Image (cartoon, rainbow, N blue to C red):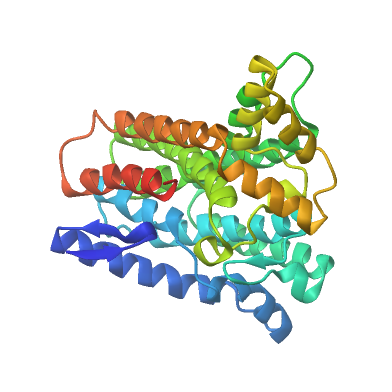
Length: 336
């Protein structure tokens, strides 16, 4: 039994383990090849986050989903490279928007080279992903385009905030469906689609990926509050500092409005203050880590992970299905 992929996913079947590891190694080579440029500086910037590592969550899902068809089909590895390049490109852009200083345990591209280079490097990665995608056929291009539209729409909705009268938690979950769920769903869809799996299997895995993607981001929300930078590879409380309300904060505000407790209201007021001040930021993190809202956010993460598990029910029992089910458990464990 060997651990592969994010969170130390345990693969107990030797054939599946060999397939996944070979596929992931090929993806890594593909990422390095796709991020090369004739301009050395572009190569350095484009490979900055590739070489920093990462969970490679989306390529792993491509490999596991491909097990339900011809797992050696030629489009599988390139499609995994496409989804990871797309994901990496969004990280470059996100760090500019969030003014983040750390990503994956290293200086963010914007902190190292400035916002303009970071944004343009993200654009470069999108271009390279599109180039690979063009060789995978018009259906793959359409699927990716729809997912990318949802991803950008989710980002815009997050920036705009909920409309008057809209439940902020419901709005936020819709945002996550676009920002994160869409690309995770495409990862599963590409794996199944490129392997020639039955259309019913493709649909099931796409639904699984959507729900798992939301659970994965909710776990990130919890980690952003509960972990230190050593655990997460990012600066804790980045969203707090930028005034972005992730699920633990939204659950706090919901509770404050419902119960009217003085300590909840005081914490909301602290979160509404200038958290670029290090002392206020540290105090807000300390109080949120001890607040019931964080535990509620953990329960929400569990619920989405359970929904992802349920989505897999129609699939036949096999080692790949077992691995996908274990990923749901791993996401929950990650959130504590």
